[in-house]
Image (cartoon, one colour):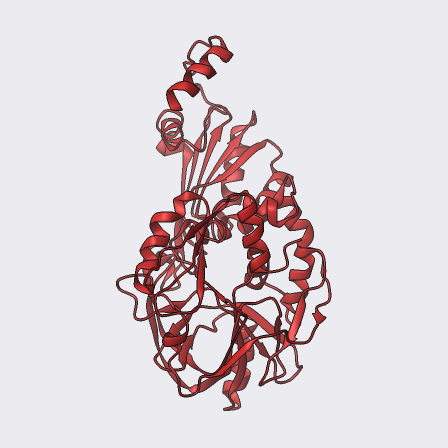
Amino acid sequence: MINSLRDYIQVMQENDRVLEIKDPVSREDIPELIEKLSDSKKVLLFEQIEGYSFKLVANCVPSLDVFKILLDGASNPGEAFLERTKKSYEKVPVNRGHHHTVDVKNKDLLDLLPILKHYQGDSAPFITTSIISSIDPDSGFIGRGVHRMEYRGKNLLGVTLLNPPLGDIYRKYRERHENMPLTISIGVDPLLFIAMALKSPWGADKINAAGGLRGKGIEVAPSFDSLIDVPAESEIFLEGYVNPDEGMQDGPLGEISGYYLTLKETPTVVVQRLTYKDSPIYQALLPTSPEADLYLVFVSSAHIEDNARKLFPFISKITFIRKTFGSSIIVNVGSTEKHKVRSLIMFLLSFPMIKKAVIVDDDVNPEDLRDVEWAVITRSSASEDMIIMNGLQGQPIDPQAEGGNGVTKVGINATVQGKTIKERAIVVKGDSEKIRRIVNLTEG
């Protein structure tokens, strides 16, 4: 059972899925190292960071098969994930364990934490794995979410509070001209991290939903300086408050789309206390890394596949194209009617995250984009098989979605369904065992 980031790292080490970087590295070198080492398909553990007592872990989700491990060996992790999202377990209050705690009112956070500046044009270092918890002033409900945080010097951080529930809680404090207390948690296992990013009904604690994913209640510990409880397993906690009267421009920050995103104004957090475990591990996430893409793809594909297969049983396989933050999808289909393929395209484009949908036959390999392109070129007619739709809802992280006018989406029917198309040329099959042996030798 994985109950913490440390448990997860240990399990991944046992599966030879951790790349341990033992040589001392500087904080400034880590983003490029993450970019260059992420293709190893291993968790990256930096053991020594010059000037810091913290280790750093990145690329925590190096490939989609990791979700099988996180979901107890489920053969279909997407299906298991959806089933578990329907469940909920009450959080389990526990006492604080042994932690180190530091008053940081007169200190510089950058001297204490290896917060990364990820891209050349970033305005500052950013925390990209912060789980923020705060308390609703009316009901006492604890709202939580994953929000980026900008280093603003000394003990100050900028925070984006655009989405519910924290956006709604913040507005209440701002209207009352009161400081909003919050606790920031850093360093949890990927399953808990995903749960904190999912949408939930108002008044529902995401910790309980995380319990549903894990299959048991999540332990929570009290903050030192407020009534906010937080995931007890976290490596690092920052406690403080949001000053509603101290806003400033946030960013630019290089985002998952591969472009910089700047927010006109976000509030400032005054951090008062830093608490951490023995031998603490700082969790980093490079926004344009495969890890960020995999988080989005896993959650979105689980929901889309579940709905799509119910309506369109002729679907054989759904594939998301890497590095498109879940926006480009290829769907293999079996024999069906042409108008049903068009209906499938319209259905897929109705999802905010899907911007391009290509439908291909089962003889096309969706992992080979050259094969997909061959199908598009030879099996689709621009006048009949390509659908272009303007002004549709897109993802907020899509740079073309800025301005609020929606995005343009495209669907392509690259199948032979209902069309007069010549038979595909297939290479003659030989002795499979001999061919496999020769191929293995040449690749070996």
